[in-house]
Length: 482
Image (cartoon, rainbow, N blue to C red; front, side, top):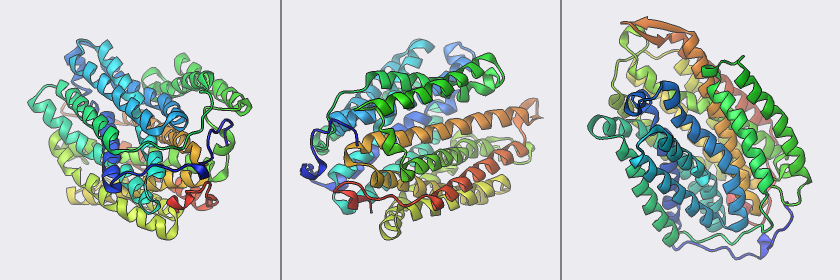
């Protein structure tokens, strides 16, 4: 456990919300907003070069900047939450969302729009903070269902983000997406302040500023190389230089953190088998899940002449995929039940098995929309089960005073997985192409390769989960995650 703990968890009387159900819904809605923010500009990327008079590569930074900002800020917000209060830092993150969204709504050029996306990205630590807050304030029997619903909110946001973005793009200005996010953010700040009590579990100590900056620089190098590798060239000097810098900075940062009395990330706790291998499995899950969310809509919108596409509009494709979000919400309660009866590791293994099946089915390129929806739903249910089990496994294995930092590290691993998936998709889809009516499209084989890779990643994660020792509960509230 980190040094400088101000209070022992066993002596802390944790605050309770007046209504656990309301608290769960409020916190889960924060996760929904984060998911919407992540995906809301993706369908509009082809339009931003014209709207902002920039190149497509510059417009792509609207996604890259948010991803990098989220990865860098998540461990920082998690540690600050453990030190100074998880609800306090949750409100700070929501304020950043509001500020970024307001700037985005009025941004006259791409520079300010990128600033807006960076500010939105810095708030991605909301997920880890919300789940950790649930552990501290909810009755033990409600933690599993609360975490499951918040995990499902990520999938719901991805499912409804596409049709919502399509509708706004077709009938109004894209600026309304940012304005709407600002309004929702303000509402959530009010709800969190009024309905969510602060956790009284604190670590105390001094914040590791140097460790945070050091980790941030290393992650920027790593994520830039992974996310821009296809565009810049994997053998290019920029990519190789960034990868080399990350390879040097990350181990040195680890040595520095091990020598700190109050580290940003307690690597000794993170090195416990139950934590370490769960984080490795999370990277595999991030890769596997993102393949479905990233490519299913592309398959639906691809021309019929490609041999695999359905020629649907953006809005129609989004509506077809709406059942994925509904399935994730429904099965979030199933996840909590399995975790309560058989343990979260069993939930994780079952979820990963379904993700293997879903991605393997997609690799066969289903020839009908009902078959595609069925296969995508199987994978989405698997993702719901897996993602709801991950924080429960992490929270069982770490001290109560470090749950936000540990969950933030787990969130970072998921983002590394999704970034790797993005890089693989970009590399494969540009290497295996065909021309239809004068336009270039990925071949069916390209989609099959990516989905097989996603199935393989889920399979590796499943084997890791099966072989990882069950975590030993730490802290007096460990029964909340049993």
